[in-house]
Image (cartoon, rainbow, N blue to C red; front, side, top):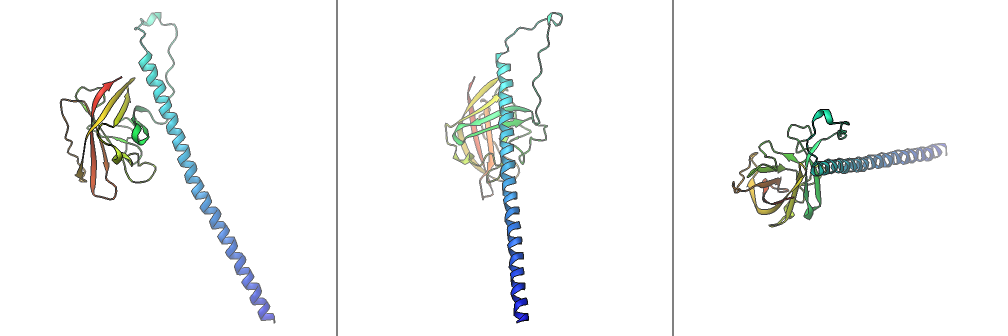
Length: 218
């Protein structure tokens, strides 16, 4: 009887330990998942704030038509815009796929395909006549897969770049695939101002290239 009693007590003890361990694992898993969602939420809110700040500064640039005043006549100094963690110089907006994303300067830590949409080093700025703005981004899944829905774009879809107080409106003209080799052959009309978007075709060894042409500057 004593042995049977000890066996029953041992079984109860083992079950209690399993319940405790199982509960701890559930709590740990919940914290990990909750932490991930919280991080993504905070990053999204931070991105929205940065874009709002960018557009406020762009509005000031667009509305600033005051002629220059000699320094001795200036009574008060105009306050400088508040600096944020990331200084965006432009914002890309693609309505069809619900994308609105700030672009960091070429030399910025955040101008990296693993952190943001990459402004390729050979890229021109939108205001260069007959220039070519070149942007690259991840497809697939993950928080930084900003071009994951780029494959949905079709001819004549709209893409805008907000830069230096102006909106540069482009339309998709052409799309083609290339092998993923680390370089990209960009086929465009050198007499036009263009925007090139590059991403990987998911689960293949190919890249998609979209060529967009400038149709309007607002």
